[in-house]
Image (cartoon, rainbow, N blue to C red; front, side):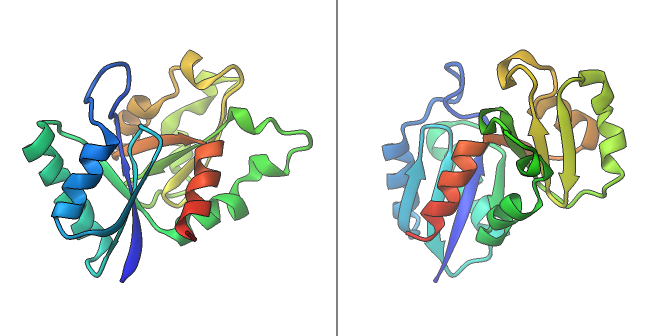
Length: 179
């Protein structure tokens, strides 16, 4: 049995795609997933299963549509992927970094380093970003709510599914993988 993390994009945000975590958990348990755990109301779900991650994501997406009527993109994340966030986020090496300004956009496929050019991040200065495989590390100058460099922009420019989590959430999700 392996633990998998599903990041659901766009649920319980500004009154859209409302879904109680208790109901989501019950739905996943009814599908046969074990040790189902959620973190926050924003769609971070751990499940234990013998299935492959891509199949789990597909099953969850289909069942959410059937039960809740929401079309919810899902990005599956491994423990190793979260560990790489800590090893490869160059913003963490900055002196006196304010981790409240750090975010990670998890995307549905591996990106090339050159993909940063497609994002045209210079248009969003003083926000900064760097790409590492299927992650985009972001340092917002003012805050995530005050920028146009968001998940919708990333998806449009790179033709991927993306979901963004703040650094505190990334840290806690990695801790939860070990529980």
